[in-house]
Image 1 (tube, one colour):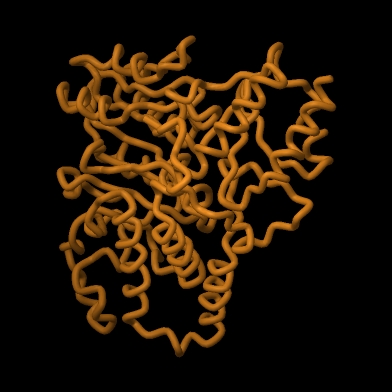
Image 2 (cartoon, one colour; image 1 turned 90 degrees about the vertical axis):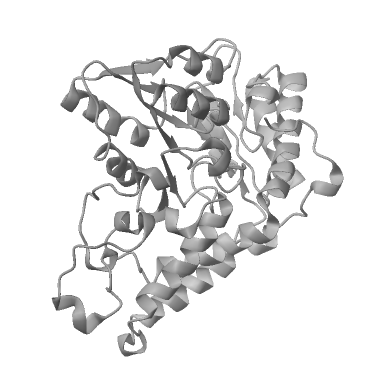
Length: 389
């Protein structure tokens, strides 16, 4: 669980200078889409510029950049590079998973109520195709998603498809406990880590998911339409949903591509999306992942936890606005719950004052990052006070 009060020694200094965010903008909306770091933008511009002179792109370049990024992401989740594939979206990654899971009509698929659709629609489709029963865990009144999920896992469970934290309010799920329950009954655990990986620790050795899909444009500070799919070693013999040249053995030999091969490259590489080498986006992801690695996820989490706890405490004390208790909420995430519901005119008032948040479900999502300043938070509360007065 998230430590409620990280020590000062664990905190990172403000990093706003690394991002192109004007002083008058209070961007408290990383869970919507992060800004790209300046260094990542520069890397992308340089990468895109290579296409202007394609003679400078050698065959080896199709492999070297992607393997570096594959290794960076693998280190972030305590995996081997061989366990990581490239996927342009969570929906693509979960389609790979769903295509390789055999279910019967006597089994169930478990998801969460109000879960992000990309980890719901693939399982609704699989239930329709197989006759399996689709089960949505209702939102618990005490915010204990873990207990609610565990109560439904039994011998009939075939798939459990979850996030690490709920995208509307940060409600946290103990995936280690869920993973153990899945293994006891032989269920497949499929995780959407988009709202956690990069800011909240995720260890595949401890959680042991079968599949983990992560889009890069939020907490990985990366580009849109770019992401990753972790595939557990026990699942790496599956059949990919597409067949591209670079996933096959000996694809480094361009002249030999006319000699078609049945064998795939090692590990999860068979699941790589076509044209994975993307010379514009791969350098962006590389630069952003390096920044996160330099900061370290534990220090990132400690810093963001301090910030969200300050906001949650003030909201409760000054305005009677509640949120998921810190013991059951991912520390980097905050969903504010207003008595009587979110005032209809509040999102517009905030946007007019250049205070950027999101409304998801019944919560107003406030998700700061290292670019957030005390002044940003004061501007948020100034609008809240004037609106709720």
